[in-house]
Amino acid sequence: MKPRLDVEICGVSFKNPVIAASGTFGFGREYAEYVDLNMLGGIAVKGLTLLPKKGNPPPRIAETPSGILNSVGLQNPGIDYFIEHELPELLKYDTRIIVNINGNTIDEYCRMAEKLRDVPVHFLELNISCPNVKQGGVAFGTHPDVVYDITRSVKAHAKQPVLVKLTPNVTDIKEIAIAVEKAGGDGISLINTVLGMAIDAKKRRPVLANIVGGLSGPAIKPIALRMVWEVAQVVSIPIIGMGGITTGEDVVEFLLAGATAVGVGTANLISPTACIDIVNQLEEYMVQNGIGDVNELIGGLRV
Image 1: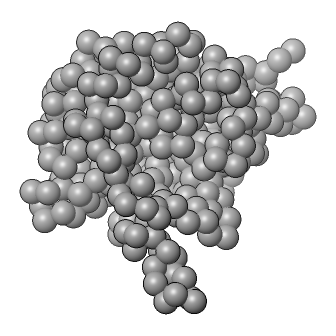
Image 2: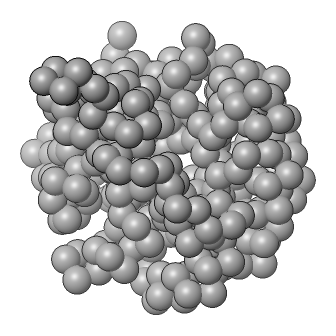
């Protein structure tokens, strides 16, 4: 008998817990010729802003041992273009759609939530690693009070469940997660990329034009696992864990740490079939270990 892979987040059923994470899977259609998008638990679309954004100047990608640094800078066509041109294609597939939104002010996030109110997507995901221009450019997600304010404000404008994607570049991730739950956030995605940099020793210059960038890939998996486990101890809302997932056993580890589902990001840049391969590996692990329901793994870490 095939094991049961479906999970539920905020009353929405996912056929399996593997979600293509925002930023490395475009709007889905870019991968459609390589994988059957219907087999994915969900797709978190490329981060969107209120207006089109060109992103940062190149070079903006740098490979590192077991990871990749990026300073793409949220290049995207804007929320209106997405709704009119990209979403209709994505809606042809039987998968859950998570729209990742980004802003420089709380008002921008709220305006985007309003635009998406009557659009048939399943979740909003707030990327709060963005610079808050009214707070001196400091990222929204680094202060519990600001996290509370932005979550509560967007919830007042949103129709869909609101996930808040947390930055790991904070002193205490638990404080931030608690602020999300207190403000009425429906779930948490973590972790976003870890701030890092690369230097060209011969040129004595930074590799990235932006100097620093976000580190992702297997190098950050231990950090992500630790933060998912910590957050799972202090909140009762569901967690989507991410950070360096490349195999089915990686998924198992995140579920054991307390995640209900996972996001697969950088692995998609290594292999376009990564998400489907990981789903198959997860199922194989469950068969080999006599696990009939993936939900048995969630929060099952023995300490």
